[in-house]
Length: 544
Ligand SMILES: *[C@@H]1O[C@H](CO)[C@@H](O)[C@H](O)[C@H]1NC(C)=O
Ligand SMILES: *[C@@H]1O[C@H](CO)[C@@H](O)[C@H](O)[C@H]1NC(C)=O
Ligand SMILES: *[C@@H]1O[C@H](CO)[C@@H](O)[C@H](O)[C@H]1NC(C)=O
Ligand SMILES: *[C@@H]1O[C@H](CO)[C@@H](O)[C@H](O)[C@H]1NC(C)=O
Ligand SMILES: *[C@@H]1O[C@H](CO)[C@@H](O)[C@H](O)[C@H]1NC(C)=O
Ligand SMILES: *[C@@H]1O[C@H](CO)[C@@H](O)[C@H](O)[C@H]1NC(C)=O
Image 1 (cartoon, rainbow, N blue to C red):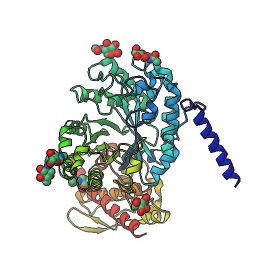
Image 2 (image 1 turned 90 degrees about the vertical axis):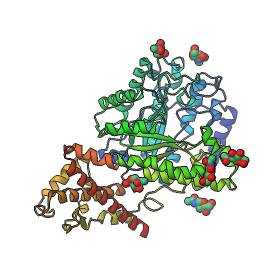
Image 3 (image 1 turned 60 degrees about the vertical axis):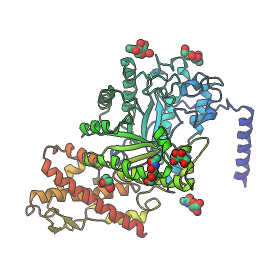
Image 4 (image 1 turned 90 degrees about the horizontal axis):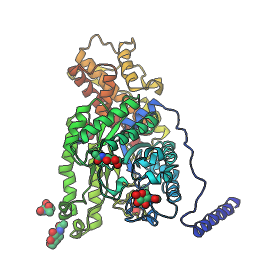
């Protein structure tokens, strides 16, 4: 009863403040850079390599007028981009800080975790790093608006951490603008990054800062160098230099670097493949609302395209190792033209949306819906309203909820009962209780493989002298794959996503990358062990 009254008093008070002073309802500035949790390499490795079920946190740190019109009320003309808010009236700093404090909160992260979302893509602008990073840019004379911006970004990452959610920090607005679009922060329509070395230098400074601050943060799953840059000839070279900046700033050799392909899937598929074993990830965006051809196609035809052409395109990257390609933005939106001849538009949109979800989940290690939230929360673009509508009601890999302690126990006890060998010999596995040694042995990737080699020489392992080296490589891979699936599942029901990269990183970590034939068998065994264990885990979760 007491709590009840207090609660109401509090609400009334908050309400009266809001009414009396809507724009500058301003609380204590949040200007303290929180520490990050201590770096945990196992956690970082799981978060960076697992399959991502992700949403974008659009319009939180980079404002878009169509998503959050209320934040633009006092903006300067033309009222379309972040810069217009900063140049506008009604105390832009207070408006933005209030938005950062309220648009998305810990409750949102808790909600996302409760339905199986394990990653968020977090668009930021270079202005989000604070006044030091905006000199000689259009934000220079409004730099003080952003004096508390970086502490808010850090807090956002920590809120995600508290919900076991990974973050991909995405440089959506680069100095000079990489695409001339309002969503890069500017409203003059000019792209200045491709050819201006001054802006490129500034962008490298931003990227270097992000890498040095964030690569030892366990739940930061990567940095995205640029969002939707113009597909200019200089882009690939820019990415090479920017990746070097990350590698020099950060001593975690497999810290993931994301790069958007400028909507040129083939060009950057080749680029990323050629970079292997460097952990670079191509980000491709998939929309069906921006061209005259999009308008001309009815919704059902778009759905068919997703199931055929798009699926084939995405899956073709399955043939190249590693398959580092995510769909970092997509939505359920279709144009009114695409909808107008559909007899049942609701059904058409749902089919279209679910077809995309299926394709992106099956054929890539990560997909991220655009966007989590907007003021007019329509189910085309607003995840909160699309869930259990055009999208599934939950996004877990195993079953429809989190892994329970009962699941956990049974998953831990799973063992590869037989080794499936290339020559179709079946050799019983030793009776050593491998997972019973607890998770402490599943440390870092290289450690695990090094340990595997050690383990295979142990007296407790199966007698290896009788096996051919082919058989042995396949068997090593099988065991490693099986245990990897267990390890990921035991970490909150995760699944390995970047499979090729994971194997590759592990192999190069122990200097085996030159032995092609040996590795092919190892890989095949790994895939088989991984899929076998995943099937068994699905069985366990399905039964309980
Ligand atoms: C900052 O400079 C730009 C360009 O000169 C100008 O349009 C804008 O009004 C200035 N903003 C403020 C807050 O003075
Ligand atoms: C590049 O941008 C800087 C900063 O705005 C500007 O001073 C310079 O003239 C530009 N250089 C070129 C070659 O356009
Ligand atoms: C849509 O699909 C139908 C059935 O396959 C086909 O007949 C029609 O030509 C397609 N329309 C467009 C605009 O692609
Ligand atoms: C809808 O039907 C009209 C009239 O038949 C046709 O002109 C138009 O191309 C169709 N639009 C789509 C997207 O199918
Ligand atoms: C691509 O690879 C994944 C993982 O092995 C697999 O589940 C999926 O079916 C493959 N897609 C195609 C079209 O081969
Ligand atoms: C999904 O929607 C259906 C029908 O509206 C409802 O019965 C069900 O409880 C919802 N499920 C979840 C998990 O919200």
